[in-house]
Length: 563
Ligand code: CO
Image (spheres, protein in one colour):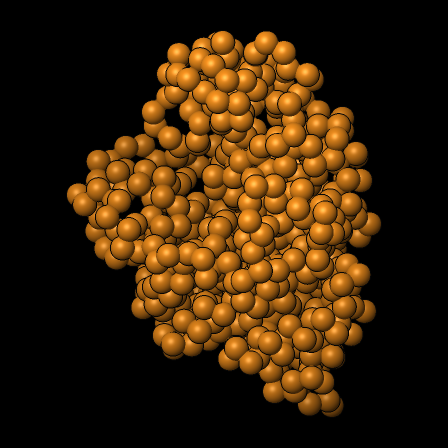
């Protein structure tokens, strides 16, 4: 009989699985009722925090994410807790200053986090440095991540080079993160073998999604090539766009002589619990989801991204143009230097592709995020952007080549001074506020004054999936979109969306009628596709608004006049 080799499994049920299937709506109570069973099951670690959980906790569940972490730690003393951290983006959609990253990691450690899977959408090591250093400083396990994608520049050699850089940063292990579920068994074998050969002592973990149906087979190939840990979810919370089912993967591995050390009868009990919970928490919309999206095998666009594109197009009354957008998307991605499609680059590439199709002229409308991306404010693109296109996209923004966070002044002290003191309870609150200012203030106010809690399942289905969360404060502008030869001086909505009579999103004061404006001034905003599109004045003069603040407008509608 073959000697059993040990392979460990990370359980993602408490984070990625419900983020992928239930729009992240699992509640702390739901978790605590089953936590001790999960703790006893024999997992390597429990991924239970980070990703979209933090935002959704405060925004929709009216829960304190820090408190959730403390409760889980108490209920699960045996198994290490794990989180997903977006490097310099922490849990948000932009780069934060180093003091924010460092203090966030320190408090996460203090509150019970053990393993930090740190990734960057562009695989730019400079965006991981601070987070990895802080994790080590505060005694955590730093897992460096390869965000997996395919492109002419994403070769095995390039991934090994990245892994070496991660190792020199001091990471304790490396994760291959296949967020789109496009890693084939063959490619996994090649990549894992190359990593093992380059650094035999480095533990390798593989994370994938069942979107294309390949992940369980791919895990087997990865394990045979030397991966020591794979990510699974309990069967009821698995498959579709979630992880492969732990019971099945354990059975496959065991049949090939690998021991996962999992207590199978306990897994049954855990599964029975989630089967019941599913009745309450699963969004109604998930009934329409196909179990396998074979299209991913062709276009390699993550499933969540396609549903976002669909809803963005629906808002623009242009659902019939989805095929054009799917055709445009790989071209936009190539133009932008082949970024892996993961938050926030998936939003940047997705929205820009939609605009490229709808505007009729590629890059005649450029989102503010695309602008910043092209100018280097997200980090180094995997392949360089063609210089004249980069210049055009960056527009007035000065291109940078340094580590983006080097340009940011410390943010904690300023943030602390912005929170109404009567709502502030702990230092953790300051971090919550830095990452999600409006959401956190709303939550703090609710905590202080009470109020309704958003309802369960049906509301869940209706509200935005976290995967669809747009970069905050993102905005689109049309640098050379003088539009169809605007004469006189109507101001026209460039897209269907919600009209705001202010020149910046979230700005409380409304622009007044009669204010004097200059040509090119941002005079109002149309919120569309989860992005705020500032509208520029086509002329100099005094502005009179005709559209109502907060109301829907359609493309081409006159929203104001400049006299
Ligand atoms: Co994932």
